[in-house]
Image 1 (tube, one colour):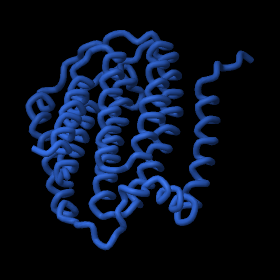
Image 2 (cartoon, rainbow over the protein chains, first blue to last red):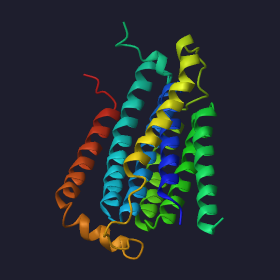
Image 3 (cartoon, rainbow over the protein chains, first blue to last red):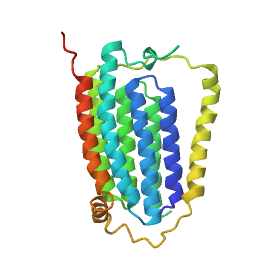
Amino acid sequence: MVPTQYYLILSAILFGLGAVAFVVKRNIITIFMSIELMLNAVNLAFVAFSQAKGKLDGQVFVLFVIVVAAAEAAVGLGIIILTARNRRSLNIERVDLLKL
Amino acid sequence: MSPALFVFFLLAALAVIGALSLILQKHPIHSALSLIVVMVSLAGLYLLLGAEFVAAVQIIVYGGAIMVLFVFVIMLLNASAEEHTDFSKLAKFGGLPLALALTGLLAAAMIHDGGSVSNSGGTDITLASTSGISMMLFSTFVYPFELTSFLILVAIMGALVLAQREKKT
């Protein structure tokens, strides 16, 4: 039996790595992938809590998170295709219309 | 060390290595493959937690559908290795401590709030988690469940509208 704390620590580590990737990476697609990594880390915490409490609500919530992530991926990748077509680049530095 | 603990550390190491590789790889397709490693090892962890339905959905939806979509877009846009740009001095020196602080704070908060929870009168979820999930999905959570179908419909229409070529008028 693995203690719940281990899962929570792993979840926090994965979330931290996802946050770092979100800030460090310069490619729009990779930045989008790091969002998925953070969602996965949160899912792990949900399932760990669900098992610790002996209730299934956490697992149902994970299913909803996965559905929302799928919808988000579809729309987000559509936006990325549009940006890449307009800017001729995938570098996030080139997308600076809102920058002063 | 018990077998479960050994499997946990194996999968956890695989997940962390995959996440690190996501950051360190320069080419987006390598980052995408690293992310697939993370997702498959997380599916293994879900199995270890007794959530076999979530594990299957993780493999099918994340490892299958979403990552194929990512790889497809990377190929479609012919993405090359990312250009390196300099960070500001503040980010260079403050970034690592801040990231570590975020990780530590998250772990501490979650463990403090819920690390000591015990199986409080709940049923043994390892036996019938899939049938239990389906029962909850179609009774307690039936309205959110129906709303997700609407959300996916809207997402499909949004993706179509965004990705279509502009009409020349």
